[in-house]
Amino acid sequence: MASLGAHKSKIVLAAVMLGSLLAWHLRHGPEMTSATEPRDTARQAEGPAAKRSAGAGFDFYLLAMTVSAAFCADGHQQSAECRAPRRWPLVIHGLWPERIEPRAYPHDCAAPPLQLDPKLEQQLREFMPGMAAGLREYEWRKHGGCSGLDDNVYFSSALNLAHDLETLLAARLATLEGNEVTPAELRETANLFNPPLGATLTFHCRTLRGSDSRPVLYEVRQCVDNDGPGGTPGTPLDCATVNRRDQGCGASFLVLRLR
Image 1 (cartoon, rainbow, N blue to C red):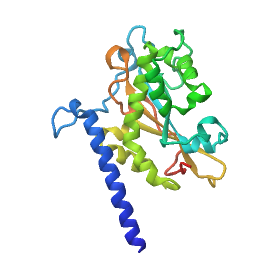
Image 2 (image 1 turned 60 degrees about the horizontal axis):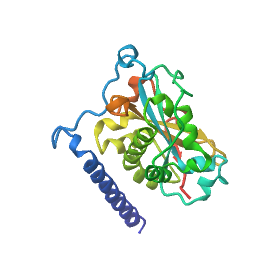
Image 3 (image 1 turned 30 degrees about the vertical axis):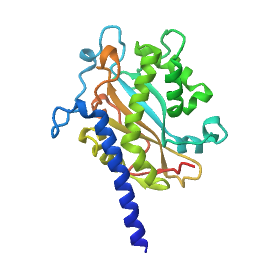
Image 4 (image 1 turned 180 degrees about the vertical axis):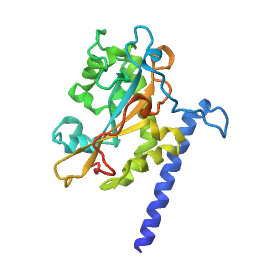
């Protein structure tokens, strides 16, 4: 009976992954060069001097997605976002303009007051529950203003990237709740959609109370070039080429349950 249950679980996981894979390809199908030869979406980054455009002040973006269960277990159980029903394993932390030199990112740039389109604001709320505590305003003030983008373009870009990252990893993270996984296994999951995509991700872990000193997956980040129209996020980047790597996760880490 146990083996039968495990077999059924594998069938369910395969079905969920197939559905996610189909959704991703329907979303990105027009960008493919052919049905059998996907566009290389994890290209090599150029050097900082060649890459940085005049006035841009940064080289690429990091999309930072927080693991909701880990955030809430880290002393935030009574926050508004953790008391509300949670639908997504990953939620938006921010979209950060970055320089290739670590810890040299631009921040707190002059920018107009935040005035989002109401429809976009509602869509964003679903993926950014921290808005209840002012996270949207904080991220715009600290990071968004340095992108050079209009506030609606900036947050719609973050939302589109978040949708894609959820498609890549949400189903797998749901099956792993309460268990350990290796970075390589999660990258293999991303590679089911397009083989270079695993290299565009970094994993960030913390040791939380009750985790028996095991590292807990706390955040997933994706490296994305600023080569889109008008400096928007464009081509996903191999994170190693822009000096970004996993932090604190070791050989394997725990995925907490989404309660």
